[in-house]
Picture 1 (tube, rainbow, N blue to C red):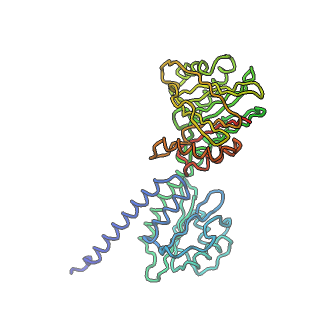
Picture 2 (picture 1 turned 30 degrees about the horizontal axis):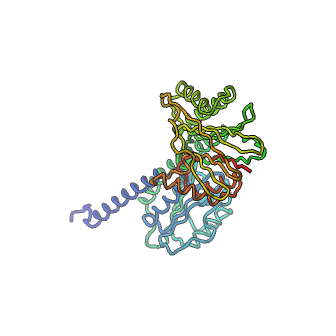
Picture 3 (picture 1 turned 30 degrees about the vertical axis):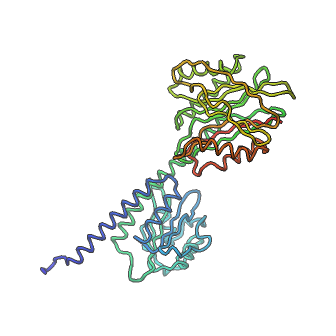
Length: 426
């Protein structure tokens, strides 16, 4: 072999190592774009780092303090110490401990285990490394836009497998990609929280209806950063009749939320100014929606009628919405008129019907949006049957407890917004 020539075995080993690094980067990239939850992103990253890069890995998240969100060991039978995951002590900004230097933006650092920790955070980190075994450790910050969003601790326990410069370069590349994913997750969370606050602010307070018990719930979707156009409303007309409305504007963005607010306001105004049946009010609303917006919407709108202490009826109309559910006091349930009229905003001018439903004593009327019965990959008929079964089991509950119980059975994470409006006849 000529001087300077690379040994074939070493060349093959170098090629295999390069291919393994490329596969790891591809896996990391796929994992990072598959979630917008910061804790989930770091958990996936830690699981990929073991055993490809380390014998065990700990991930730290910086958001309103420091939390250790994942501890993963290459041996699935090795459990991290009790309480290893969770909030951590606050970093000391003047500390020279490696873990605090990394959280301040230094690194990747090959941690020196000779020096004693001098802060609560460093001592908590040392307790973990002592418990799981350590020979060499690399600490790397997850930093984007000059902001540290987290950190990784990569530990090798075997003396014959120290970290090399190539390892540090690879760890740095992974940390860069992870930091961008965390920053996206942070921005997503901020936008989602703002959108949900806007949605909640647009929903009204419920009026007092005397002997009638009234409750409403709004549960935002957890998949996606944007709100939908789900809304509810209840108010009392000039003739004393209470009204109930649940609707859903097409789209899942802030525009849909704003359009939802407009639709709610227009419906209130129309109902207040025109003493007409619900079908006529809905027809007027349909004309306004076609003029002001390109969105479509579904809605149930109706009024409660009946003398005090006498029979109570719900006079209502349905524009393409899921049918209300009537829950009798004995647990019997039935959907009301499942064939609704055309939804709002289609450009058509259909005839709309008024439906009159007697509400027996002790019964509960439930109006809801599609997020309650629709689940991905499932026929909607199953969701409708499930709703009837769950409602029957809670037939004797007050409206608020009924709504809370139904929301507890929605999938996690919720795929769509859910609105519930329930009224119970004493």
